[in-house]
Amino acid sequence: LSDLALERFKEAFEISDGPLAFPDRSGGLPIESHRLTKAMGRSCKILGVAAAGPHDLRRTGRTAMTSERLGISYEAAERVIAHLVGSAVSRVYDRNEYLREKRAALESWAAEISAIVAP
Image 1 (tube, one colour):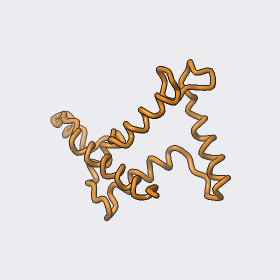
Image 2 (tube, one colour):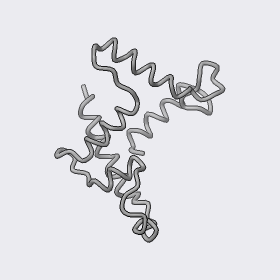
Image 3 (tube, helix red, strand yellow):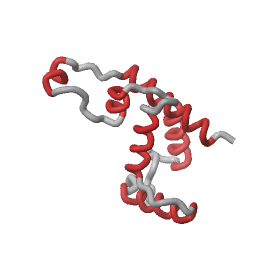
Image 4 (cartoon, one colour):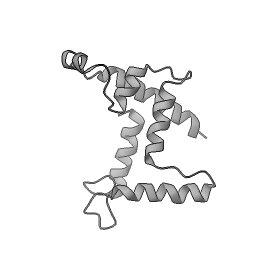
């Protein structure tokens, strides 16, 4: 995760005041995944934008990484979203996790997000 993402998770843990970053209303269980989809739907309606869901955020990040602005390689961007890269044979021989490349890609994306939302 990028430093920005880690900061947001730390804040979420502080707000929840418990062992879960995003608990349900009881505080004892993780929030159900469909709740994010519903919350995004409500937000889109309020903002007057086309409906979007969590997968749209993933697609937006992936697309932005390989944009001319960020210039992240196709392979690194695919690895960030946990897609398989290369042939089955090449994956047998290349067991690297490409952590440095994925970290750089996520930091670049975090900087882009920060620039967009900066006051």
